[in-house]
Image 1 (cartoon, rainbow, N blue to C red):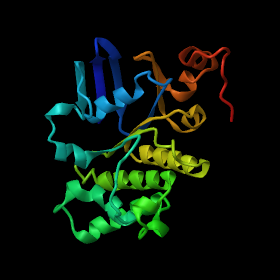
Image 2 (image 1 turned 180 degrees about the horizontal axis):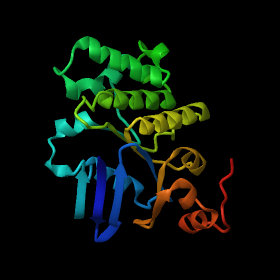
Image 3 (image 1 turned 60 degrees about the vertical axis):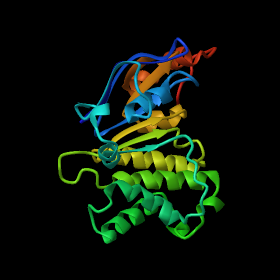
Image 4 (image 1 turned 45 degrees about the horizontal axis):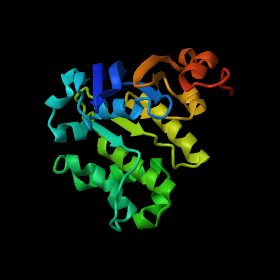
Length: 252
């Protein structure tokens, strides 16, 4: 199963902010989208999730055109964690995470939904926060809640039908401290290893190098290169893509 961009372009005020991007991400693989600010990473992710429509080209999800799916069917198969999530009501943490189960309403028992919510909270180290008011949390704590909500949304997406869950994340580590950055990357790596499709926009190349299976480098609205992390994240390529004065070697 895969999500694919086929010569996809997004044009704004006559300029292609993403230009003829072709990319295939598959289940069982952790794909990291990397590159300088404004290079097209979030635009590509938004095409893959359906948040944006391509002005040219094609976007396919699990061998069908993405726009042929009903929104509820997509919501049961893939979850999205955006750069920012606005929630201005004083819900408790477990209630926010339980919102991820909305697309599955009536398909399972309340006990099954509650078990998934509990597991998602545990994975993000949120069990002690279950009764906390979401609005009282720090930015990093809120981000962990948002990720837990996405996990709960697609935790049982396979349903025994040969499908696999997909998780799309835009800069998910930005608000997290070092402990939770590493914990999240470890989790994403494990989920990919168990058959999930993971696609994330990420900036920390050291974490990407140690955790991602496929790295896609963007530059000036185009895909510059894509492949296995050790092959793509070379000192010379990093220097070129990020316009550095000297080659940049990743260590550790």
